[in-house]
Structures are given as C-alpha cells and as structure tokens.
Amino acid sequence: MALAELTLSAGEAALLNAFPPTEAGEAARAQIAAEGLPNRRVEAFKWTDLRAALADGIPESDGSAGLIPACLQDALVLDFAPDGFGLEGEKDLGLIIETEDSLELEGAGPLATLAAGFAPRAVVLRVTQSQSRPVVLRRHPGAPMRVRLELEAGTRLTLVDTGLATAGLSTGLLEIEIGSDAEFVRYSLQDGKLGAIDLTQAIVTVAESGRYHAIALMFGGKLARAETHVTLAGEGASCLIHGAYLLSGHTHADMTTKVVHASPNGQTRELFKGAVQDRARGVFQGKILVERAAQKTDARQNHHALMLSEGAEIDAKPELEIYADDVQCAHGNTIGALDDQALFYMRQRGIPEAQAKSLLVEAFVTDVFDAMEHEGVREWFSELARMWLEASSS
Image (cartoon, rainbow, N blue to C red; front, top):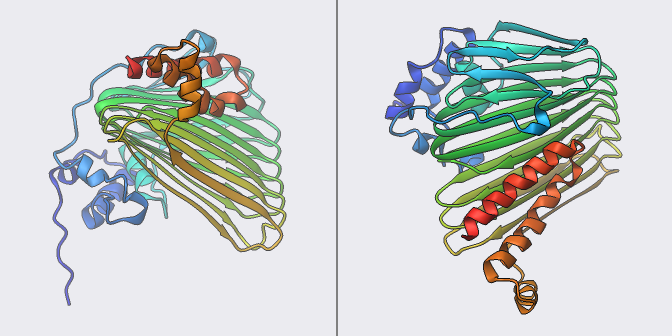
C-alpha cells in the first residue's frame, strides 16, 4: 500500500527556498521535503508544535540584539547578523577562531538539522589555553548561528550566548567537544516577543574528568525551544545544567535535555524552575540515560514550577533510563501554586499582595542562578528576572 504524499504547509514550503546552497542546507531541505517540520504527532515535540508555529510562513525579522551589559564589557563578542558574522574586540592567546563549510550532521535531530542548514558557514573556536575573559555570542533577530567549540585538555572557557528578537525565525547550533580535565561554562539568555520563533540546540561531548556547566534563562516567544544533548563519554566526566523560565501573555518556552552517561563515575546535576501566568505555556523534558558501562554514576534531576494564573499551562516529562546496577540516580517534579500560608504571613506584615507574590516567585526561581561563578552575569540574570516579576505584577 503506497504511503500518502506529504502535503507541506506554507511555512515548510517557504523553508525549502530559504536554505543556502551548502551541504547542510541541502540536507535540511531534503529532510523537510520528506518529513515536514516536527509537530504534535512527534513524541519529542508533542507540546512544541513547530509546524503549527510556522504554518503561515517565515515571519519577518524585527528587533535588536540588545546591548552588551556592563559586566561583559571586557568580553570578546562574536556578532551573528542575518548578513554574516563579525568579531568585536581582540582575542587572547590560546583562542583560535576560524570558519569552515557548513557540513551535514549525520543522525542529527530536527533542530540541529535546521540550524546547520540555515548557517552559510560554521564558526570554529579552538581553545588551546584557558581563557580569563568570557566570549559572547550575540545573535541578531533572524540570524543563523552555527558554532563549533573545541577545548583542549585542561583548558577553560566561559561563553555567554544571547538571543533577543521582537519577531522572526532565529536558529542556533553549538557543537562542543570538551577535552580531558577541561571545563566549559555556558550562560544562555533567550527573550522574544509574540512574533519571534527561537530554536537552539547544543550537542556536547565530555572527555575524561571534563566538566560542562550550563545555566539558562528563558522568557519565551511565539515559540522558543532550547535543546541540550550531553554525552559524558569519559570516566569521571560531569555536567551541571540549570534553567529558569518566566512566561506571561501567550508566550511559549521549551527546555529539553538529554544526558547520556557512557562511562563510570560520571555526575549529573539538573535543576529547572519556572513561573507561568496568563495563557503562556512552559515545557520541560529531561532524560538521563545511564548505559551499562556507566557504573558508579551519580545523577540528580529536578524540575519545579509555579502556575500563577488559571490559564497558564506547564507540561513536564522527567525520565531516567538505567542499565547499570551500581548507581545513585533520582528525579523530582512538582507543579503547583504559590504557598498561601507564606503569602498570608507576608500580607500580615504590611507587604502589598502584588509585591508579596513577586518576592515569593523571585525567591523560588532565582536559586537556579546560585551556581553561577561569574558574579556580574549572576546579578544580570537576577535583575532581568526581577524586572519581569515587576512588570507581571503591575
């Protein structure tokens, strides 16, 4: 029996003509022509329907990439605009920056395929000596970004990536290889409006005793998804992945993670927290896979979220899949409302209700940022969260 021919939406048809003539662009074009965009019938996207979000075509890009905050004024900035890539500042010794052809990613998921397909070139950062200054990846609205990072053994790099847009389709792909005893720290900020679609994926491989440390803050958009796949390939490799989402109006944000423990004595710490109000929707999907060889694994995953109004929606799917028998693994997931007793206590002491709610949500969410070693970025993220809370309670 012949399969029915796939009927492409206006958005899917527009995408076929939007990819540059690169190997990765041709691969993305072929995948969309054959399968279409991910939609609610695909398990991993059942709460984040990309096909529906792009049903009417690719939205026009609008907005600003934003200013670099004072705490990062000394950073090296890699600027990604719709018409190309630029560098602001002088790079330090031990950091090599090159560009290369955007090649096809074999076996990649749909977000990685899309992001690789849109990028006309890949930017490659090779770290041969530890870097004392952060590197900032600044994406302008509608700009494609593909970055490959290679950290040699024993080196360290801090990266800050930002995606801010009023409207448009923005894509980003990070391919990260962390050498033995190397450490990569990543801080991510995503903020979009109702016309913005933001899709990013990080694919991370960590060698023996290497460390991946990532903390993200998302405010959503028409549809925003940040996906992280980590393979702890070497013995003693570890990762810490924290994330916070603050959503209002009709915004949508999806934080999806997958961590594979492939070797012994690995460690994972995941903590995600969210607050959602109005008609917004938050999504968390987290999977930790412990392979048979990964004995002595220590993995913890927690997701906790607050629904601040009746129309808010939060979908969560925490997973543990364990094939080793000598491990310590656990996960937790809670979704609820603000503590009425705590709210009553604060109001009894003369704190107005709106301010009391804001303080409680701030205390609940911002401990996600406690693990940030860069004090300036930690204060910046905390201030952005406070600004959102003040605007949401007014």
